[in-house]
Length: 432
Image (cartoon, rainbow, N blue to C red; front, side, top):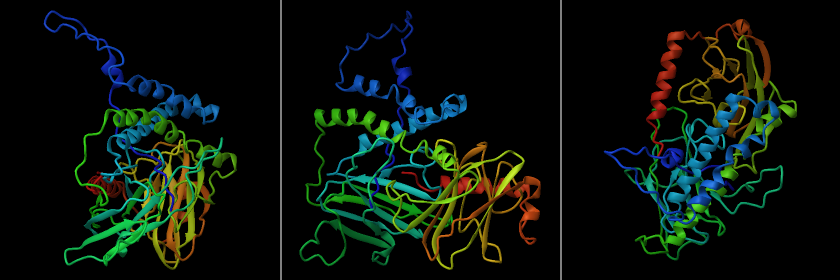
């Protein structure tokens, strides 16, 4: 499976403050200004990021570009892209790789799935690598290969077609639950352990650790090493460090605008308060996963009811919300995502989910969390069928009478505790 990293990076902190003039005083005289050009590439790094928010805004409709709230959210998205690109620049080393965070609740470009912890590691095409650790008990842990980014066409996004995907849960483990697997273009002579064939053009591995029962499943541990180079890491040269610094603006300016207009396009295509199947095969979608999505537009006294027959068998399913610039709605602090463990089907086998700004007092609720417009996206993974839910809009006051009579009631106190418990469970999942 081909998955270009939609994101990679750590935050850029207070550049403006660092450049602010210091006040002279008798006790603390001003420090002399550093000579210009001390760090080659630094000025170009700053200059390359100056218009990043403008590049993102240019992809949006005029009414969004002029909205003060969305403008600041675009600023946050730009910081996410810089953070991702910075982490990549600091950590990427194909000869001495490590799995580091990609996207999450705080680095939001690429519209992360709420149940998934993402990690990436850069590798060298044709190299031989060893992964080992404890497998844990996650329902789904997939490691996808990524390759060179195709040439982009104006107005389109192409991260490349599907590439091989490896299943960590299919590996053998010892009595302590430890796995050990080699990835290489060809199997090493005489090797009898677990081995995954590695496409000789692959230059990145993307790990998805997908959990449904937050707080109960145990995350796997992951280490990676390259076997066909010496173990010690030499001091990076000045040229390598400069190249990494200069790479940040190019990466951030590609990542930040990448999907920012996807919700607007759903509206243009007429998919407002209704859903359609989505082909994400060129956008880093997971092989074996079916996506559906649509834009929503709701007043505070309105609700959407999504209905779909539950597949007979299903490895994983979820529903999430995004805002107008395709950032996943904050699922740590709001009831804005649902998976199979959190959203059971009704007795008639129909999955029903309510989307609204105010709590309707039913279990399967997606909170729009202050965003009256945005997108709904669902996933069916390794399921026997992939239904696209129907959508009907009702008055918020009519939600309960529009659902089966035996639908349970959730009190405000129960919802508050539910939100606190989901936040605690998510915070206890490792981000690094």
